[in-house]
Length: 269
Image (cartoon, rainbow, N blue to C red):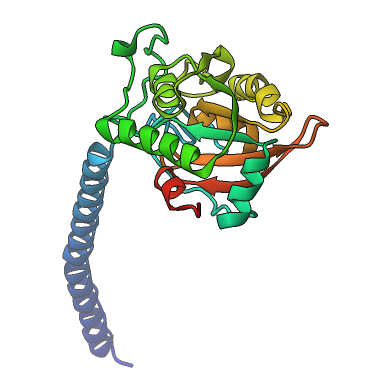
């Protein structure tokens, strides 16, 4: 090949290389700029989403704090409702009523409906109703309706025991006309329950759930969601709901039925 031809090919190669470099550099810069803008937009969106997401320090199992998303996580106190496994009744209708008329059962009620549903377990003083969530008018009516139903169904009642919190003993008083307040039915004064607090709630209420009632009578307990959940693994909802337990006389019990506040009036007479 002649020297002239070599120069031509070298010149063409240099031109192509320069052109490729000139074209490639802007494209790379553009890609980098677009990538940076995309990353910035994503980070801005994520930061905005975080700022709009509420901080949930309320109950994962109970009183919303009483409340939240149950069951069995015991993340906080009394209040909001959550997703609980569906309970299947073993006794219903006339069979349930006839069994209760024979006595021998423990009936645990979660207190009636309150005016608001929020976590008050840290600051609520059991001795002062003004520091606590209180029953709403609906809660009063629930309790009175339950009491009337028990009379009409001729269900015998023995001991009536309630927690020291006003919404619990007032539910008992409105429904049954009497009650005994016991700290053993109280929820722990914490917004986030520790394992030790959950165990304490369980051990405190278990003697009441397992005690065999007086002959021919049923024991009434009125308390809170987290305490029942701690003892049974079942989150009691909605407010005003009852669970019927049969103590076995050996420190255990069987849970046989769930009855909501308005279902008592619908049971067969």
